[in-house]
Image (cartoon, rainbow, N blue to C red; front, side, top):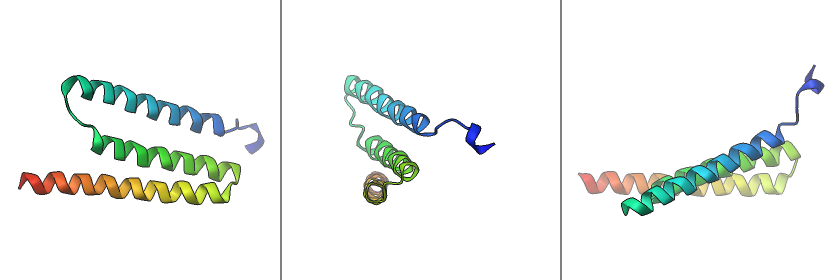
Length: 91
């Protein structure tokens, strides 16, 4: 039964491509409005790193898995820092 399932790598690749397209569209939209999408960039980067982590896990690449997981943590920390800084400035 499990052998009948399709290879999941193509699905991960499609979702990564959609995330990059989403980020490009938001950057173009923000550029026309004069805003900086740094917070969104950090959020989408963390998600993209997690998707690449899943891809590395499916292919069995341990070193790449650990690097992508660390990259996701760094991007997530940057996202939290941007959110914290924005909330602190609003007080």
